[in-house]
Image (tube, rainbow, N blue to C red; front, side, top):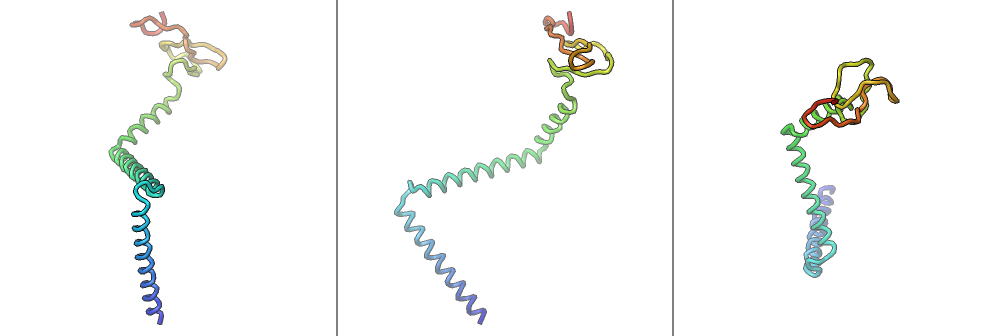
Length: 128
């Protein structure tokens, strides 16, 4: 019957697993701790453990809003664009007031604020 065949297959699989386990135990005893496969297996296990720990730390950072807060700051900087970064041209269609370290003019990149090129003395904002 089908049930008898299934039971016989399960018994054969159990015997094969027992024989394999016995062979592995004997092989490990003969090879010792310096067996290349054992060394590689320990290295892989260590790498897996480190990856799992990093994954847990990342998940914890996300759940505690550390990463989202960092992302919001990065998005704000990107949204701001190059404005306020020293040495960068800031396009402008009209003069909107003096900006420390910049001059308003028409230049190679069009109309806007160009880096002044002069460094004001300490304690004095803007141009001198």
